[in-house]
Image (cartoon, rainbow, N blue to C red):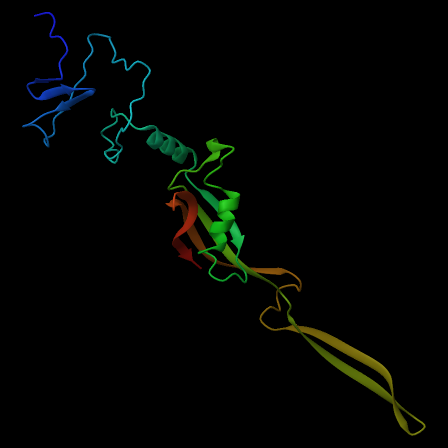
Length: 212
């Protein structure tokens, strides 16, 4: 037989061809059955410049599966994560209430925007990390003690001040810090990651790495 004519469907053993679908059929449905496309020799599988879609990434936690195909989004994200393993910043949080919930993520979204519509090559993938060294600061104003000594002279029965001498002493816990210098106290290292929220990628607080 050289020609079967036009068929509505064709079933051969455990594989069926219906319309544009090639599929495994009972009793193999639900089982782990490999569907193979095999070219001969050095030949290739040619899809005629069409796209191959719906490629899974569910198995990529297994590093032994290096010969598996991957979807473009997975490869793009992996490539970006290799190039952007993480960021580090130092930030003064003096006077800021709950800085990790709103203020620092807002700064990060401006400084390191996860999405760049005009320059998508700079987009950050979900999972990108930034650690922020937080500190508080204050201008040192040490306590100053002034000791004054006056000298008097009696003129016409009145005691008149004729001399003043004084000493100045710096006291208190900041006595060893020159006045006017900035005192800095590191408080913690906070970790932030890029997450998807309501369809948009944004920076969010993830964890406190260490406190001081």
